[in-house]
Amino acid sequence: MIFVNFKTYEAGTGANVFGLTSSLEEVSETTGVKIVPVVQATDIKEVSAGSKLEIWAQRIDPVTYGAHTGAILPEAVVEDGAAGVFINHSENRCRGVEEIKQIVERANEVGLKTLIFAGSVNELRDYLSLNPTYIAYEPPEFIGRSDISVATAKQGIIASAFELSKWAGVPLVVGAGVHSREDVRKCLELGAVGVAVAKDILMAQDPEAEVLDLAEGFK
Image (tube, rainbow, N blue to C red; front, top):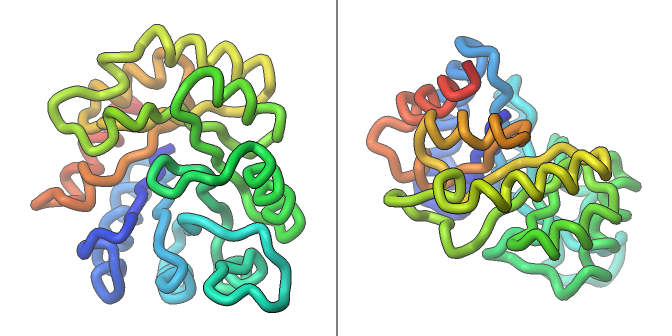
């Protein structure tokens, strides 16, 4: 599977999300590879209404109905059509394990799948005890890189992360600088079930061709 994080790139914001999501859906149907757009909260409703793909939210807050100005309510993203949520991405870190636990609990309450990001094996070990749907190893120093990726620079750590996730029964996703079918293939060989990407797709001149290349790594 490929998680495509739209972040707040212009190509993944507002009216632009429809063309990009359509391209991802076409590649998914052509290759049989599951592709998950992870969009801004303001775009979930429109995107999910017009796509067959499973749409995820970039974040939620561990709040319930009430006086929480500016918070993203879990119930709201579910009502809009989100199926899952990213937690503790390096660009939007939580305030420690306790907050991550609270978000996972709220996500479970409303039926959202969860993917917790860990920047190190030690973090990954800690977060596995929270029993997320997926766990991601994504060292922040490689995020957005196009000259090197986690798949080439951290193979031993990916293998270690897989052993931990396997023991916990939580599927492993790998991200940070993944930008080629070779990167994808290496991550899968090391035990991952999928990859998380962003800039490689969102900043590409031809996003559909780029994601198609990544999907080839699953063959």
